[in-house]
Length: 252
Ligand code: PGA
Image 1 (cartoon, rainbow, N blue to C red):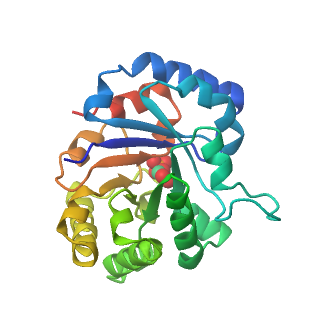
Image 2: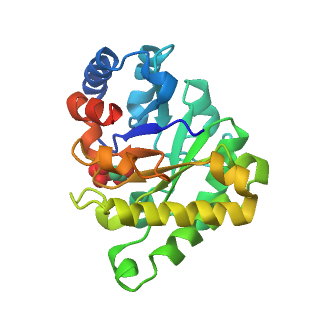
């Protein structure tokens, strides 16, 4: 049984004061009962992680970062290590988001190192995969997505894979208001689970949570979550206001 996970990716939004305000509103709205059948995660920017951590301790909302560098410490100007994230109470880290692949130029080899390093430090990676519009139009959506999946998980032992969270985020659906149809999303999620089964065995594949991301909103979450292989959502824009994120957390 996979516990659904609703994750908010705040991206480069929210000062500390704005983050505290949002977290206080979320905590008011999230009833403790939710943790039994679903898990909630927020991933604020680095500057807000430390001040928000004490507000979230012993709450039903988990804390995650949006990136990290795959080394414990060292001369890596501008980077943040998994040890530092662990130290302040992060449990999750988003890795390989398409904005980092496209804007910062992260490649599969670096993302794979990050995934392995996160696992070694007890952080749960949320590994993002997904094709661009030209790739989908060229009929390469599955090849690209499964290639990123294979590369991202490549450094892990088989028994570690069951604890990883995968986020399928078609790049053309991110921040555009255009969501993949539930059928298209389900088809890719099934392909991802199929690839996991053939590499790591069915029981591992059945344990891995596969989130959908890309313009998830209050009005499409229910139909997405009704798909058998969609185990949650990675939410960008709609995670920035308490009302919309809470509605998504409260999917039917
Ligand atoms: P969006 O972003 O919900 O604003 O489309 C999702 C993401 O990039 O994780």
